[in-house]
Image 1 (cartoon, rainbow, N blue to C red):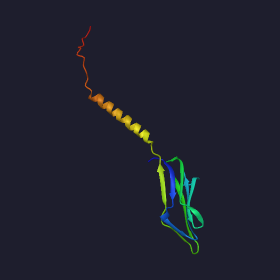
Image 2 (cartoon, rainbow, N blue to C red):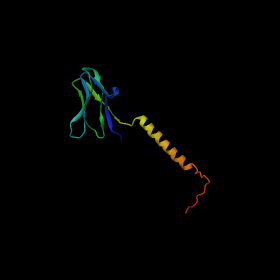
Image 3 (cartoon, helix red, strand yellow):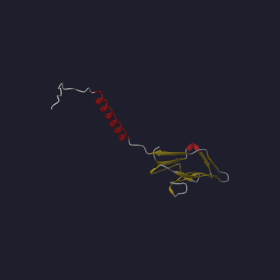
Image 4 (cartoon, one colour):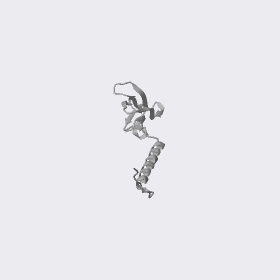
Length: 135
């Protein structure tokens, strides 16, 4: 497919529950290779002691054909607290050709096909002159 150009991590409102003292946190590192250095870090977090919560994190980067992600998910409920995580969302966007370049290619292809078809259908015209051999 097309290269990946961004990544989004979302902690949906209906995907977790925290009550004092509780924390739900996802840390994420993006890497070029399994053992390489992170080129981007993100964090989503909802904690009863932090307002407002950070429920979305997005990072854009140069187009990449391979991407490795390492996540640390922390669900922490100290005594008397509640922390539940039922789901989170991970989205990736891919680089797609510009619509104008696609339309240009389609138009050019259509013109080429029409020109070829016209040439094949056009009858050859003769002038009625006869050729004579000289010599």
